[in-house]
Image 1 (tube, rainbow, N blue to C red):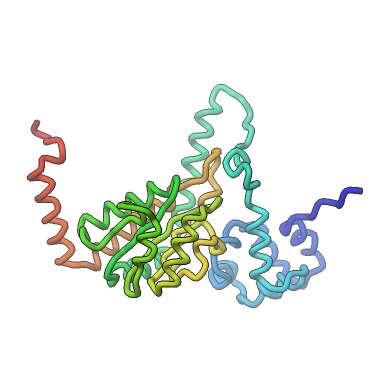
Image 2: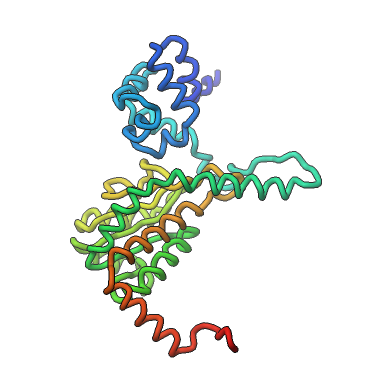
Length: 290
């Protein structure tokens, strides 16, 4: 006889709500309505938005059979994961055919992408940028689709820090760079579920070396965010479409570059002007007059 399917943590939560004290019911309804935020934001942030005591989230988790909030959050995170064998096709949703179905999909996706940006915590990015400003060297790692985010951040930072920024594995095997991490340096790792083993190896090497680890990730429970000094969260899973969104990760990367440049003051501006002069001398860009 087959074992009955295990209910989801959200189902468990909703079923338990009527039997909970009134205040825990309020916290429980908040978690149920904001289950993505519950998997990506700290308990303190959630409590502030819900107008509740952070300890109420721990009491809620224990009331429905979990050892604490972290175990409940891990269960909520796991429940959101598509099967590992189909991380992209598992996201695909059948949509009702119609003359404007394609336009509707585009509009829905753009709306979801835009809605996720205001939820990126600006203070966390500013704190990480201060680390980059003071770092002796900045290493950036992004694999597969996240390579584009890493390349963009590398390009922007090198415009005013040309000798202190490097892509992990950009000039040779990754393991050579992993052994080069040092204290006083910053290592940025970009990733979202499904996470690559390579991103986890980079994060672990940074941690072991005593470098400052900055994770740009879709969840605080991402394996490449474990032990990170700064976790910058973006929403990858919410927009429609078969592939997760990188819009938030790109916005974080560009914000990091902008704030790091601003902190650099006149020296950063002078280095940027020097780079621009070299680009102009090499006729890198098409002349508007040409």
